[in-house]
Amino acid sequence: MEYSPPPLFKRGLSPHTRLIIFVSLALALLVTDARFRAFEAVRKVIVMGLYPMQYVALVPRDLLVSGTNLLVTVHSLHHDNKTLRDKNLQLLVRMSQAAQLRNENEHLRELLQLQRNSMIRTIPTEVCYDTRDPFTQKVIIDSGEQQDIQIGAPVVNEKGVVGQVTRVFPLQSEVTLLTDKDQAVPVQILRTGIRSVIYGTPKGDTLDLKFVLTSADVKIGDELVTNGLDGIYPPGLPVAKVIRVDKKSDTIFSTVVCSPCAPVRSARQLLVLRYEDRPSRPIDANAVNKVTRQEKDKKSAEADADNNIIKSDATPSSTSLAGV
Image (cartoon, rainbow, N blue to C red; front, side, top):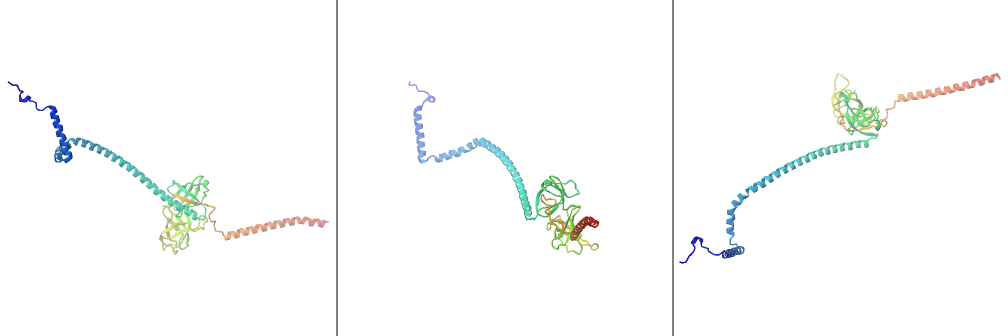
């Protein structure tokens, strides 16, 4: 009786045979797919079937990458936002400084233009601070005796008269502003030529034009300039403009309120006019005649004295001759 193994333990083709078969089949499939793309539809079906599993498998990686990118983006945005705020603040500061420098440049150009157009010598100066007395309108400038500042010198800017030097120190000077209650400036109305004196007020915001008759031709908007008759302020400097005229029947003088032409309280750069270069006071004819008479009397007195001396010298000579 022939012995055969049970079906469970039957062996098929040998491993080498299987290897050759499967390698040949793989090569045939590769060549067929490469030459004729026969399995393109099969590949698409397999990819579509595997895509959900691939997406689910990549979800943790995508979440991790997205979270990392979000943190980096937020940090970068905070940093960029802070940098932009700092740059914006710097640009605002520079813009403010540029605007201030531009205004100061224009102010200095106008001031230098005034200095070039002026026929008298001027000293440029700058306001240091206000005085401590709240009842006066005074400021301190950074020029004094070292810069040849003299008491009584007018102080102006490109708009007009600002004040007058009232005290001089070695390196600083005190300027009484035009609006001070104790300050007075001889002026004239530019339109009509009427002369008067303008005074400061206790409030320090307006000016009062005194000694203007009610019949005088004064209108709102008239410009007041220095008349130069006091020998302190050169003629033609703008001082103020008329803003209100009150004429009352019970008085002979009108109440004329004026506003300064120059920004008295906000002026920064100023010009001090040289005192010795200003026009001298008008010559009084009576004083000249008086001086002339005094000189003539002095000369006649000297002549009489000389005659007396000659006579006294001649008298002994005649006596001696008589004795002889």
